[in-house]
Length: 80
Image: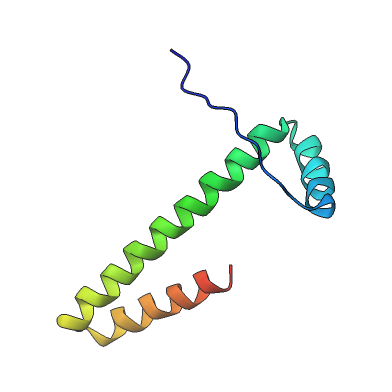
């Protein structure tokens, strides 16, 4: 059984033009391009949650060098 679902999204003309250009360069369909984008964003959110949980747990039992390293990683993920 195919687990793919067709959806409709609304994007600006500019975003669509940029997406079309990038997907052509990658040899992807537009659906593949947007699906990959969603997967990437979901993975970043998951990694951020894991870092936040790590920082929280380390704050309960602190090792200052590890806490600072994790905070820097969180700050860098905010800028990505």
